[in-house]
Length: 312
Image 1 (cartoon, rainbow, N blue to C red):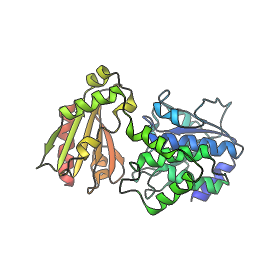
Image 2: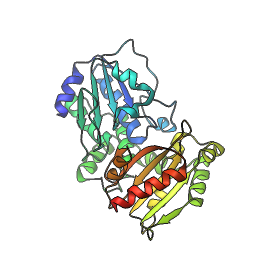
Image 3: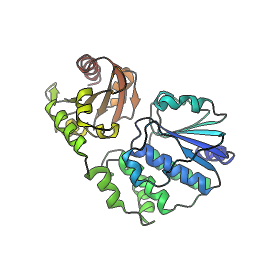
Image 4: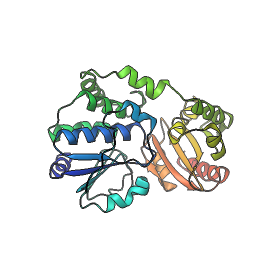
């Protein structure tokens, strides 16, 4: 099927690449790597983001904006459903040919051509394989972006989704001469003052339930505004409850700055949290999933705990 996707892409001339909103490292690294790959193979390609200038773009190549005069293909990257495209859904739907490349097991196949591999540790791993089908050459710039993608979604190769195949691909990326230690320092070793403040607030909210099997942190809209945090600064807070040795399910609740809903993240080393997320209208991976729920943190927390206990 990936070869078929490659054959479809080969027929295109002007391609729009659409990462999901609130794009993370896998999403951004995959999108900009794909742009470089397509340009190398003679395509005009542009990445359109929902948010402006995520900090992570500072360590990626190919991030300069490029306007296209019309486009004949739209590729959604790392996007579990069309709603995650946000305000760019119209761009995607208006395109004559649509492609969906993803690794979320709950992906609903919303494009004309879909390739979803839930066994891939990251969408960046799929883009690496697609590159070979497209006949592109692995450059340092492409490798840099793909390493950002794969390292991000594997927790620097520490999560259970990391396989021998993942390490083999990473080895190929390292052979180009990328500065992997600098990339990982940016991804995992540095925090803004705003994020440090949010981590403090999250720890102050720390709660456990069911004899420590469920661990929860929460961040309010006001705390996010007071800290001066950007959307990307709120990422990773779920690792605080996830680190509790007794926790089977870690949960992070974040009030949205845009609307009257709470963003809920789930993580686990032993429980299929995608089942919890799906029951609440969301989705994701077996070990990492999420959803958005209308309401206050307290009302959402009650609903989330009820759904989590059903799975436990």
